[in-house]
Image (cartoon, rainbow, N blue to C red; front, top):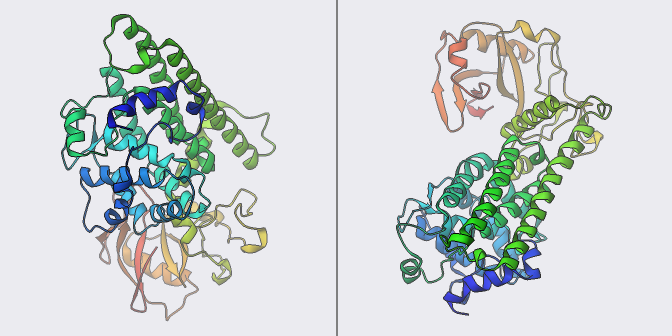
Length: 461
């Protein structure tokens, strides 16, 4: 099949039953790609950051490699994509890249049409979504879900709206012929309809795999934007049919156009049902007696609560691989406060039972002190390799250290030297006697975390 026949093949699929197949296999593909089907391995091993050409070549090669749908070669690429040290690291790098509808051949910006869309197509390939290596598949979609707002809402949806406003999928800096002359195996979309279908199928896959996604506020924003843009697109297609002001091939064939929008509408309805059902099920699980008291306000509150849990305990390889807490090692006294939901721990419901394991797998945490309100600050430390939440009533850092020593069973051999406040990958140094007031605390979006040193070893809370 020649390169020129790809748009015609895709549009012919729009009018056949293959359009209703899940995934992107019949919509986004590379023809005659055997020469590049192993390139993705070499690119994953490349040192240093990628440029646009690297990302485009990797995605095209991975699309070819996943054509068979099953087999050890498919499992190989899935396991590499879900590997935190290789594929996941590169996937996060790609999602943090700037993107543009007019990226041209620049190294530092990714083309929305020629790089990001094929990437979304790769993520929705049945070779990946139906793969038996669930650990790696879940890690891949978790990485995407963790970047839902920054990648999909702030970037992908904005680019889609921009193309819709132009009535064109063309890059104004480089035309398709010039791109193919340099990158023979690039994917060139021919219709905005491809973007809508792939985005809906990716979001549906996220909803199917990640329970909390159904009450994520950003997911609702994306869905409503998609509904609005789909309506605008459908109306503009009908208008352009009269004036011939667009190159979108859906304009030319009324039957194909009606069939395409029927399939798209059906998948939008499916996505909406998943949002509603997932939200309702989660509410009833957490509040089995609240069927008569559910209000729109409750939905909003629940969505925010789940979003906070996602931020502080992201699902996927982090929670799955991190060290689990054994509550039996805590010194249980009235001064110790243990967080009910430490980072990277299994979530617990209001009854205190663990949702991912049997009740007997974990000892219940020590309850919060009723007098917690009298303390000025709450900080994290590590004690015996376990996360511990300490109430701090003093004003300066020296008070914090002394109170922490007392509250950790008063152990004289526990040497805790305050290093600084730890947030993400940076440390803000603190000195003994420095005032820890609200103005200092409020500079951090997340609860203050303290880096301490115990017996010469550095621990992070």
